[in-house]
Length: 303
Image (cartoon, rainbow, N blue to C red):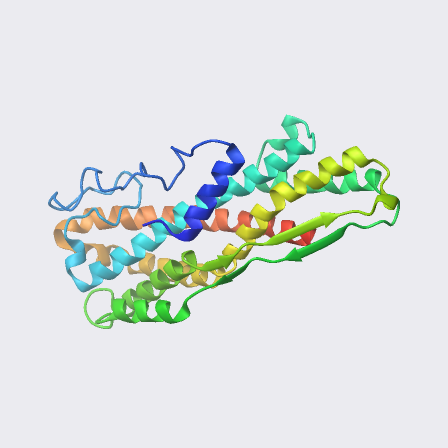
């Protein structure tokens, strides 16, 4: 089941790209879906060489306590990775859309997300300098988006998952996987109110009405998307810190942990390697999305 955050960014991607995201990561054709060869019916599952996180492979590894906790952690990681891939796409496309409305050259809208968005913000500021009288300011009214995480549900889910985490394979590290999985899931399912943004300028301070209106339209169209993402990323900060620590602990357990699953050892090793590979991507996508959306928030606040 996709999280509300996945649904939001997927919806924004539709609005930004103007089409149906049939091939968007996180859609029905994501590798690791129910029809992928090597599912639960295959003894031992896949070798894990595909590089994709698939909590439903590796046979019946989740029948044991440590396997059940690992599966929850893998699922949370997959959901987190999918969400942040989509979020990073929406962040960049929102900036590209604003840049196009500002009349920026196509070459300036290519490259890394942060670079593109920085150029868009600089263009916006430059446009205001020539559109408004010196010292004039826009009238900006912003009601930020507010996101709420059900901490009680998260704690209950973690406690239910931990169960016998202190005993058997995985020990306390398995308990950490439960807490991380519950925290990520709760953050991805945060309930949020939409932002409300109004940007106007008094007629007496306007020098170039056409350029100003084009600039303000770009901001009104693009900033709310980035503001919404900024609010939804906030609850993930703490959850990602706990998740990253659990990933480190899982890696530290090394081959001994995977080998404890006997026939599924090779597959479990592949899944852990896929998780560690996803970690780099997750942290990079989260970092750039937070940075760009924070800049957008500062812009909307008059910064």
